[in-house]
Amino acid sequence: MNSNKHISFFLKRIWGANKAAMIVNFAQYILLGASSSLSLLFTANIINAVSLYDGVNPNHIKINIIVNAFSLALIVLFQLFFEKFSQGLREKHIYAVRQSIEKEICVKLAKIPQDILDTKEFQDDFRIVNETNTNLYLFITYIAQGMSLIVQLVMPLILVTRLSWPLLFPCLCMILFSIYRLSKIQLQYWSEYLSNTTLRRKMDYHVGLFMKEGLFSVIRAFNREEYFFDKAKVSMDESINNANEAIAIQNKKYARLQLVILLIPIAIALVAVHKFYELRIPVGDVIMFLGLGKSIHSAVISSGVIVQKIQEVSISLKRVYDFIFHSVDVNEDFGGYQMVECVEKIEIDNLTFYYPKSEIPALRNISLSIHSGDLVAFVGENGSGKTTLVKILLGLYQNYEGSVRINGINLRNISQDNLMRIFAPCFQDYLKPQFLLKEAVGLSRINAIDDAQIREVLQMNNGSDIMESYSLDTQLGTQFTNGVDLSIGQWQKIAVSRAMYADRNVMLADEPMASLDIDSELQLLKAVKLNHKKSTPKISILISHRMAGIKMCNKIFVLDCGVLVEEGEHEHLISLGGKYSTMYNAQLIL
Image (cartoon, rainbow, N blue to C red):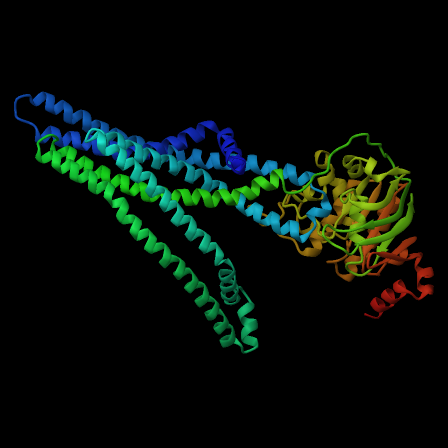
């Protein structure tokens, strides 16, 4: 039972999301399962009424035919009504279930340490979880279809009791055995299909080389079309042969079982014909029982497939369940936080940090101090640990060694909410919210947006090109009607403007010049300096591997492979002739 906890978890969410929609949706499938048997019953009654008519009591026969014809029409009308009425409710129900599950996923994500979120292993695992969450639609559909098939089997068996009670037990045993064997065959085939995953990926890769835009022109430029076509052909042949072998094995087992399942309708038909010749049942009942045998046969075949489908989706959804409840240990809020209103001093002592499952430290024995009024730069090549250090300061990475103190208070004793009130970050992977322009800039103070201040910070960051082309009420992005897409440089100007508009005590700008041209870069550096002086006391921290304008900072820290190798002002670092001097002179030459 423990292994199926995820099933009960999803069933509770399905029921709790929208009870009325679920009832209507499942009622449609149950009616669908019963309709074929009931239709046969009412049709048989009409045929019997006509065939047994002896001219003695015409009114009774007419009423019998009308009642059965009306019942038959009612079933069809109800089925059509439920199909149309439940379609909208079914979609609403599916979305309600997904919203419920996705909310729980978001709650779990919010508790997982950022250093784990940033690892490739976690991102790959979460991508699979996110994709399998879409199988909720299939899960609900297959359960509803399963209920329909149960009714489709129960109704004929109830009607078969009118033919012969002794026939019920062997039919029931044969049905259960057949569904069990069909499910085993289907699951085995699915397992063999999954084992072909590597071959199919290989085939998809080679075929994708010709289908992806721009790749084929590269292949053609090397005059190697035939070579790649041969590679694709080999991988396709391997995958197809493997699939064909699995299908051939399944078809042999399937064909043998089909013959066994056919014994059910044959047995019902033989008994019905025998009783007809003995004049114990009318001709309409014979037709009904022939139809019921066929209905049982179809339901048994479909049931085996549905069991396999539910099992397949269940395994997929277990990933979502395990992620929500078991995937990663989460941070616990231990309380007892201390408040920081205005940052006077940031002290870092012997800071060392490892990413999960990494044996090489991203930061090693970092010690430094920053004071109110400092305009600071962290420089270094890509991968030197600059961004990691920023995320530790923001409280996003918790699992570090050493100490980080703000105004003498240990960083771990300051709440995340408090940190977000004193830091204004601008990350290298900046947010591109597809909101109104003024919302994208004013996100940090969304409930008190000041148009004049937004124009001011955009102008300060050389965003005049944005304001000349678009109003503050322009919809950004291409996901919505009349939305406009901006260049990478324009999005970056908005990201820096958003950090400045936040007007926090400490501004952290991680690679804010990465996508800017030279003029925009110089304008941005001027804007950072102007914003730094605008409100005091203030700390501004620039993180960059580009050296232009860094000399305006009064403190420069140079990182190399996670180690703090130099610190000081520009002139002092140049005179040392070390790492900073080498980087600065190399970029100056370029």
